[in-house]
Image (cartoon, rainbow, N blue to C red; front, side, top):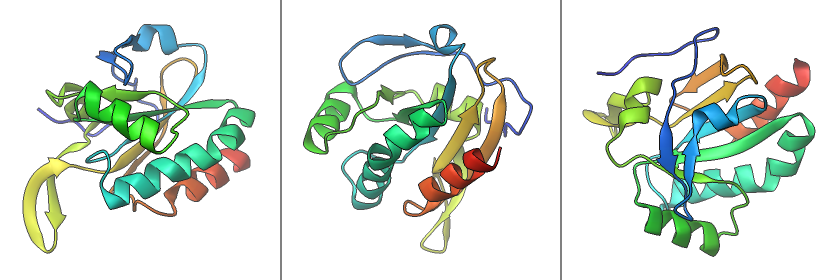
Length: 156
């Protein structure tokens, strides 16, 4: 079942492995603001552009008080290759069963080349230190939305 979380909703709890096989628990993330971006697939052209855009803006986002975390359905091993290949400087979480994707409303019907299909919906969630959604951005473009997020956070 998929939900569509919006501003003010509690962000879902989770326990997932990162690209190094470390267990990441959402309870341990409380106390710091987080930008969680959901992407369809590691090492694809669009997702690589998006991941590298986050990589290049991580220091700026951290200066604004936010850590960056990526999320996809890819296996831990693929995330490790992706992280190493593109020098990604933040955790990549593996959600192969799509449980967190569905809780976030980042998996479901979407248009792909004009056809309605079921799949990962490229999304970004800005979460405050109390684990509450500040911004929920869905159907974002692979390029350009990091600048939009930075602008949103700078204006806050």
